[in-house]
Length: 404
Image (cartoon, rainbow, N blue to C red; front, side, top):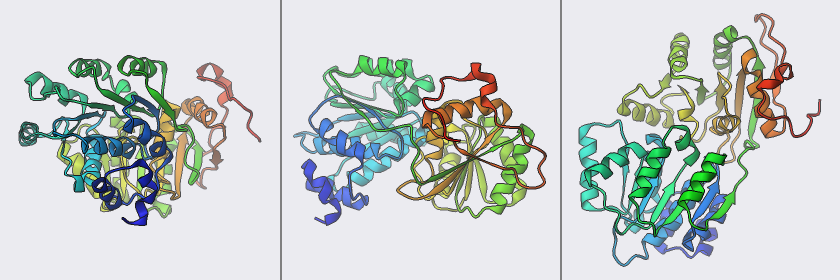
């Protein structure tokens, strides 16, 4: 066995799984993997707070695959539920990689695809798979047709559970869990743990172990900058930044689907290789765009927060928050698309007057101030950054004073 996987040997994994770890290029366990793998291997329920980019997917896949390999008879063993089809596909791809030499079988089940894909999914279930990775809606459709049998089921994983609640899937999750055996291991991963999330976790787990990997601090390699400006200055500034900067891969986040489409039109005359990514696109279009972006055939994506979680692309140089996200944690997720795997990157946020209080809350969460850049020459005077003038909009005060 290569020295690359020596650190994983302490987990007493199967040789076939070690081969999969080697093929995926893993060298050292991340903090979440180091903490979660032993807990899951021991059969404990787990509630883990960890954001995208921490290695959380492998943290639950490695011990689950290892436990599947100890089964005398193979059957539908594990159900993984995730909020978006993109995340479902990425988890399924990691199962393929980690479980390749162990013969682990899986199926990705999600909506928005054609009848042939739907038929292929049902055929795969008829043939038998070890792991199902699914979005809630499509999984419920399969349950209602009687296609899925959970009689020998062992593990349930909810990934990005807080995002599923944000998207309105709480009732769906309860419906699915009613159809699962009570004697199971439940593993819940969430980037945040608000009261509603904590209540769900308590309801569906039994004597869970808990892990909290720091979730509110951006990677050290991210250069964070911001521009305070009027709303009508944004389109001119975004062109200035992307045309004069040397960025090979960029994601621009906007607040709504309509704003994403509008930005695509605004930037169409730049002749840059860019695409908008939103829910109005057909599933095939979305998959093609993401594949092209990963392959660097497309250099810029414009999207909503659907891109901020579940997208697994290294080498993104620049993230632009065209609109300040309403939730401070979403800011962490957005800018976390850059500076992955110990690389560096830049995150730029446009702060309009109406969004100053939102950005103040973000700075409060991080416990630091983000550098405010002067607008380039040729721009009209920008507003001052005075978020304290409307204190009633703040969710919470700074925990400590900034050094000015």
